[in-house]
Image 1 (cartoon, one colour):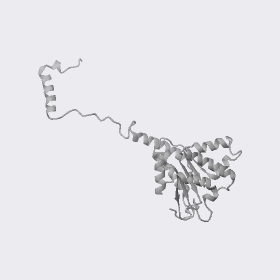
Image 2 (spheres, rainbow, N blue to C red):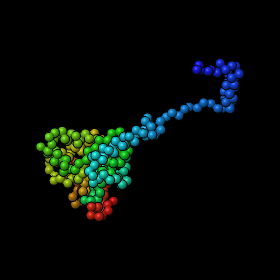
Image 3 (cartoon, rainbow, N blue to C red):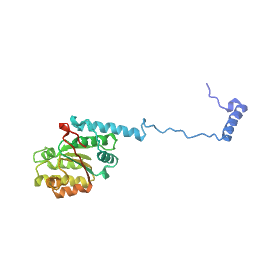
Image 4 (cartoon, rainbow, N blue to C red):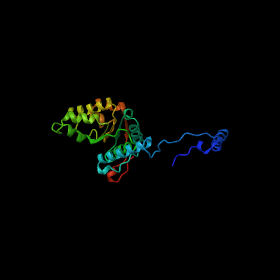
Length: 242
């Protein structure tokens, strides 16, 4: 069948169409833009891609998190605020130090912070979580087939690092040098780090991070690290922490 045009219907049909157009113009009715922008559930919308990034990051978080801490949640406002800043702009977020006695929930909050960052859907989500004791064991001679410098370089370069139980190892010139190199390199590169420690940042009795790590390291930490002191009794024994 051949297509039919308005002109082929005769002068009267064309006049009717033109008259209708003129009437709409007199009434102020004009054609509007077509809203063909994607919705949050469609590719191309920023929220759609943020959700996809969050799904991927949360899977990485679950893989990197020990089973005991896979229900962790960042419940402290200061921890939440830091995690949100890391997700938004890691280069300006600085680092976080959680202090408190054994069992106050520092590691729980640390993994909860990592989870909150993942759920925000950051553009980059590469994490490494370790304890200070495991780190020193890895970095000692013959601690890794890759060698001390390669392992230390990896710890320095990972975009987001959790170092648990800082200050728990027996202090020596070697541990002080390793710790300083790690903290200094991450500080210079503006890479956020989350530390936990059973020791306070500073105390009057000499049992603090300054005594355990040395003034040089604590001075560097104080430049870009916010401290959250957690209090309470041992949660593992049925107490509550805050």
